[in-house]
Length: 109
Image (tube, rainbow, N blue to C red; front, side):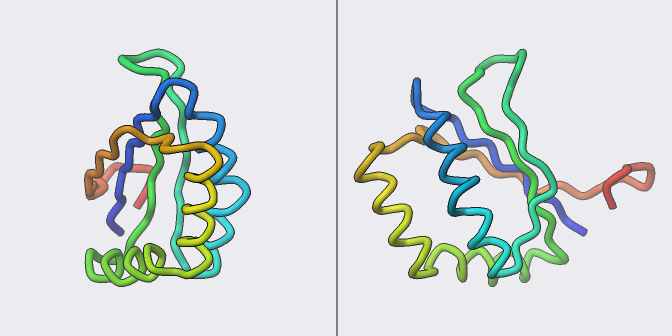
């Protein structure tokens, strides 16, 4: 299993709208497409409390490429994201993505 760690750095005040978009729209679309989130986290103590960090589980980088492209071009997602931006503006200032491989002693495999 490969894990993708994505960190969304929100504009000041943008976190509530981003969290709502994930809860109301994104997760439902991911479930339909077959994306597997492993956890979502906000920062309590650290460099920025404007970050949403989450993990996605992938069987391979090829699977990630295929499913992420399916998600990015999904008509429901494209429309929902456009509507969200119309209402809230851009709530994410930056996205950082890392691909992680679990160690032999990791609780996530």
